[in-house]
Each structure stands twice: as C-alpha cells, then as structure tokens.
Image 1 (tube, rainbow, N blue to C red):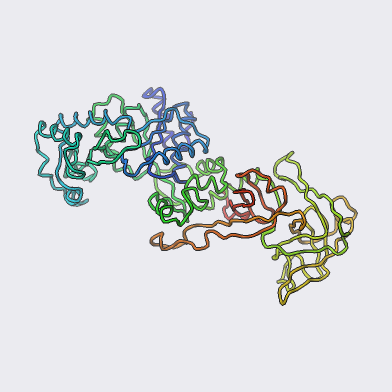
Image 2: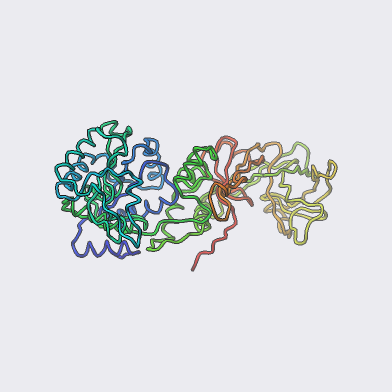
Length: 537
C-alpha cells in the first residue's frame, strides 16, 4: 500500500516485514477540558490510519489526574469525535488499569528499579540538574527493596499526607536526557475519581501510565506530538522493564499550530471560568464544539487536516487555509438567501400600490439540480445603506443619482430621489424599468451593479452575530490581547423562509458571507466570502 507520509511509510514497512498483522492505534485525550482544533490533527492521523490500513483505533481517556477531570469532558470528547465522522473500536480508560499499574510499580521495586522518595516536588525539581550539570541523587534512593515495598503499600493505604512521598523510577541522575533522571511514577493525591471514586489515594504519573496502557492494549504504533520526543527513551524503559511481551513503538509528529488561534487548554478554560465567553462551545473558541456551533462543516476540518499533511517539525499554519476549506465546502453546499444588515427603505414609485409578485432566487448555482426558491417582490423594499450614495466615490457601481442597478433576481431600477431627516437619507425613491426581469425584452440592458434586497412587508427582523478572532495580533500574554470587538451584534432584515430553517443550517447571504442559524431569529457568521488563501497548483 502506498504511503503518504513518514508515519505511513513506517507502518507499510512493518506490515511488509510481517512485524505486525494488524495495526492498532489510539487517541488518548485527558478529560480535563474540551478538545480544540489542534486535536483534530491527532484524531485524523490515528483514525485515518485505522481506515487506510483496515486496523483498529481505540479511544482511551488518560484519566490519571482526578483533580482536573470530569465526566462532562468525557462526553464532550466522544461527541466531537463522532461529529468529525470517526468511530472507535474500544472505549477505554487509564483507570481500567490502575490495579495492573500498581502491580507493575511493585515489580519495578522488586527489581531494584524504583524507590519511595520523601523529597518534596520542589526539592525533586531543584535536584534534577540542568542540560550541562548532572542531577543530585535523592538521599532515599538506596532504601532497601523491603522498605520500599512496605512504604509503597502504606502510600496506597493512605497512611501518608498528600505530597509527602512519591515513588520514583531508579534510572540515571546523570543522564543527558533529564526525563531519565529518576522521574516520579506515583504521587499521593486524595481526590475522588470520576470512575473509581475513592478507591485510590495514589495515582500514576502520565509518563508511567501512558506506555503501560499502550502495551496492555496491544497498540502497535503510539502516535503523539513532537513534545514527547524526548520522553521516548523513558517510554521504552518502562515498557521493557515492566516485562511486556508486546512492545508498541512511539512515533512523534508535529502538532498543529494555527496563527491567530488560541490552542492552550489552560487559557481556554480561563476564558470560560472568567466568563469572557459563554462556554466551551462559544463560536469564537477554537474548541471543536465551538467551531461546530460556529457552523464549520466536519468535512471541511477533515479536508484541512489532509491538506496540511503530517510533518516532523513544528510550524505555524495560516488560519486562511482552514477558512478556505470551510468556504470551499459551503460554496458547494450552502443555500443562497438575501439578508440586509443595515436596512435603507427603497420605494419603487411606478410599481402599483398593493401589487406583489414572486421572483426566483437560485438555491445554489454551484450545485446541479438544487432548484430555486421564491421571494415576494413589492413596492417597498429594503436595501443595504452601503448600496446607495448621494456623493459616490469613483468606480461606485451601486445605486446613485442618475444611476441604475439591477435588483438581484428582479428588475433594473433607476434613481428618482430621496427623503431625508437632517443630513441622513431615510428613504430612496426609484422607478423600475419595465420588462427588465429575466426573459423580458429589456432584461439585456447593461448595468454595472447588482444589489440584494428584501420585501419590506414580508421580511423578518433578525439578529446577526458577527464573530472575529478572540485574540489580537501581537506578542505577549493572551489576556492582554483580548479583542473587544470579537462579537458585534447587527439588527437586519431577512427573507421570510430563513426563520423556519433548522438551527445549525448554513446559508450564503448573498454578497455578505456564510452564516449559520443559531436560534429562531439569530444567525452567526461562519466565514467571509473573500478568500485570501491561494491554493498551490
């Protein structure tokens, strides 16, 4: 099978050599927050390999830190993965293996490869050394096996205070890899676990738990972000010394970084806790639940992950690429509609009072057979204030004195005059050109501008939520760069049928952008019409 990246190249060689008959991967989130757009890359890689190589992919929750974890996060993670279109083979939890992990820790003690340490977390950190100086051995490093077994059991039985003792691996305090300098395996932490309750008061550390979970589950390729590259020797040390027959291989790839986008789970949680946003699924958030509510199609996110590829070195991806994928998908699939954001009354003087007629608007010209819908045309309309000017700049092709424009799907109109209150124009008067609708004898008249509109008598009041980046460009703390205009509310006038659309349905508002139905009379911006990204041929 052809490989498309360096990870797949490794997998193909492993299959061809007979090292593995079935490929097993896993997606292992910690349930301490909602997934963000950066996680979509890891999800697409792990589940994509399952699909391509007819293998398996487990969803495994690394729930080893109960003080920060919650069932809410577990359920949100599952919902996000399903929304992206992926299915897992087994739903697993690190807590499924707490008994096995404890037994493996005892095994390391019996081998003389682990010891109970009384140093505080601060002292352990101080004694770890630097990249140029070796660490200092703990004064408790040479306790006997018997003493360590007894103390570790007493840790489990709750005889010591939180933080008073840890279990550390006995490796090499002079190792050039600081991760190998007697890392902590277990700490004392009295916290109720969302699955095991109060059964345990000691919990394994991530670096110890993760390789054991992979080995227990028979994972063949443990795919993780580049930040864990220096942890790989420790990963292999635990697998080898805990006597596992099946040994997974850790492979690192570059994590997804997108400019103008916050992907720090800690900062995202801070935004939620301080009510800067209205929850994890706020449309301005980079969480998957946020972009789902924003109206991003899941297919567009999968397309984005495919386009950026899998690399070995970290880099920053332009947000414009993601927006291009979203825009491309919506251009093909979103229904067209008309919505006026800043309404200006327009009266057609030569249109009979009380008369109305139906005009056809294409649902989607990009989609064959998508059909049309009707909108009522009448004497009084609303147009955008920006589509009229008494003193237009050069090359202004919208409505102006002595000018003509076409009303989308309807007639050509020519300017007559205005009504004003002080200096403000409150109403524009026009005449329509007879038989200038499509199929009419004057339909071929040349005008340079086409503007959108809604019928003043049948349109509906709507609220438009215009979203932009939460964080302003620049450097420094995110908290000092919050965008005060990340949400702007606009009162508009929309086609009547939009109010009966389903929440979550997406539309292209002609000449404005793409929007999603948020509530009965509320729409939120998804992405603008203009595309700044230029795909390479």
